[in-house]
Amino acid sequence: MLRLDDGQDLFETLADWARRESIGAAAIVSGIGMFRRATIGYWDGSQYRPRDLTEPHEVVALHGSIARADGAPSLHLHAALAGPDHQLVGGHLMRATVGVLQEVVVEAFPGRIFGRPMVESFGLRMLDLEPGSLP
Image 1 (cartoon, one colour):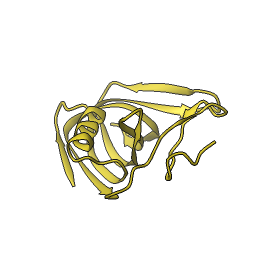
Image 2 (cartoon, helix red, strand yellow):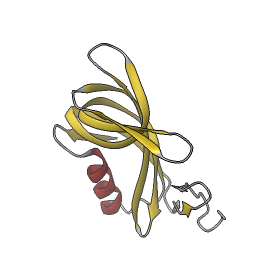
Image 3 (cartoon, one colour):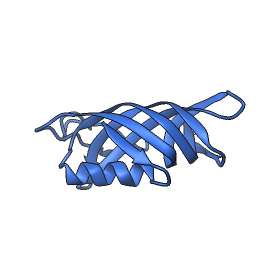
């Protein structure tokens, strides 16, 4: 369980933690809290269409994975966020700054390393549970 504080960059903080703890394979099981700012994306089949959220949003759900790409932690996160109008927005989380706090549950898989190679046919980095097995 991790707690991130106001102003921390979600991706930088999680990647730094994964490096310090030598985490090569993990699932982000859940996360709750608030983001001051965030960018979410929608994959339209060929590219992400980003949407910047410039006002604070409650994090209703956060989940994803931690793998390695090019020797560094690689995070793939999705989020559901509630704005002041109580409407949910969500999708691929591209960027986020913590507002107040963020509580994240991570399940690490000791001794494992997940890969995230670029799969050219999709134009995406895809999770590889057994590195080297994807075409």
